[in-house]
Length: 87
Image (cartoon, helix red, strand yellow):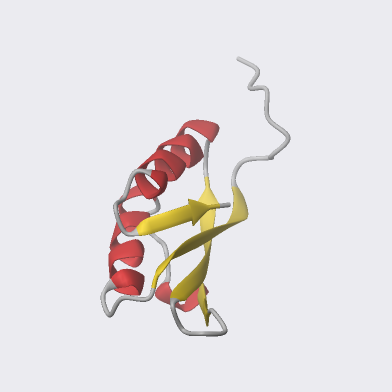
């Protein structure tokens, strides 16, 4: 079966998650990513606060094993109430 994808699996795939600055935002995103990539390492999270400190951008680099896995992760992140944008 051929998948219509430009990504070769498995591969490391960066995802940027943005949300309001909140004390549990990073931990919550880590736990959510872990559900879709059980081997995800918190050391692969890069965090950057916005200039005014209102928002936090987190880049997670997951081990993508299939398009289905990435789609499910994007849906979970996009649907989370703390998340504003997923890129």
